[in-house]
Length: 70
Image 1 (spheres, rainbow, N blue to C red):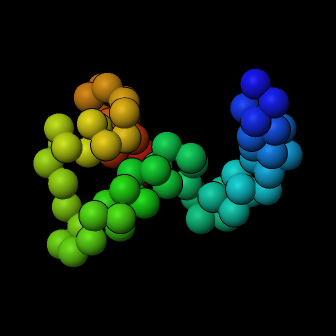
Image 2 (image 1 turned 180 degrees about the vertical axis):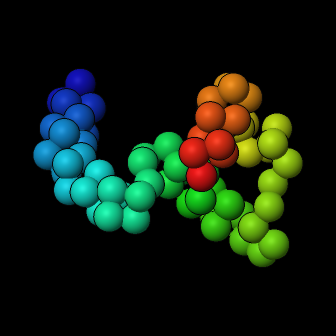
């Protein structure tokens, strides 16, 4: 529990700074997750929708919302 508590504390402390960086690039955390997942899989930086929402651990509807915003 102590480890999880520290991880949560760190997340809360840095969250606003991270979100400010994303905002300067007109992104939110979910959109960044999509882009970073595609980058992590490398060229040609494409995944099938099912592969993408599985990797992101979100629903297909959640992926659709993120893709529409991007």
